[in-house]
Amino acid sequence: DGGITQSPKYLFRKEGQNVTLSCEQNLNHDAMYWYRQDPGQGLRLIYYSQIVNDFQKGDIAEGYSVSREKKESFPLTVTSAQKNPTAFYLCASSMIGNSYEQYFGPGTRLTVT
Amino acid sequence: DAKTTQPNSMESNEEEPVHLPCNHSTISGTDYIHWYRQLPSQGPEYVIHGLTSNVNNRMASLAIAEDRKSSTLILHRATLRDAAVYYCIRLTNSGNTPLVFGKGTRLSVIA
Picture 1 (cartoon, rainbow over the protein chains, first blue to last red):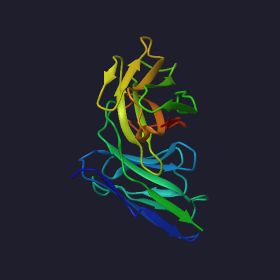
Picture 2: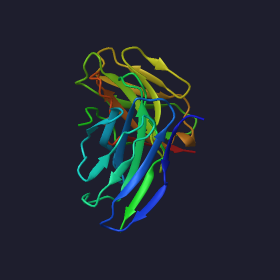
Picture 3: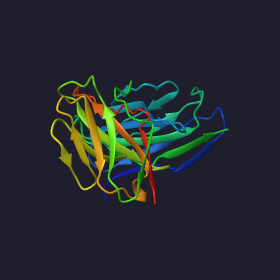
């Protein structure tokens, strides 16, 4: 059963703590992405990776970090430096090229108080 | 910069066709047009994409204008399950494939 999994679905943290969101795919996709969505808004790109051990910043990378040690996994760490971390976080993957669709995970809703 | 323009919202009656417009007047010759939709509290779902010719799949049809400056997503018979935010995205052929999302069109379907 192929797809993208994100865990957990809901996550609660205290301000000042780092938190890592999991994203795994078994679609053999080269590219993986992290997006953030705030209420009533579209998705904004945080980081993306097209190959293992390499990744690029998106539009809103400040306060976030990623790693890509395996093709299947692309975890996102929300650091204490992120000023407004409460949001819906979505992971996606795709083949590389503009004619391929992206597949999205179910998302993780992070609440920081 | 999403580089596409869509109406904020549209409404349709159930079982009727829906035409969702998108303007992408600065599109270049190798840019693809992708459509995704997002149901409440879920990740976006791929709907359809095309380059020049009209495209059909089991979910929808995509009509691309001859000058490629606009396109229309067509849902042939709207159902309540089609109520979602629909995003029209222009994807450049730069080798980097992140999607740039605008605010999309919120489609309401009335029973």
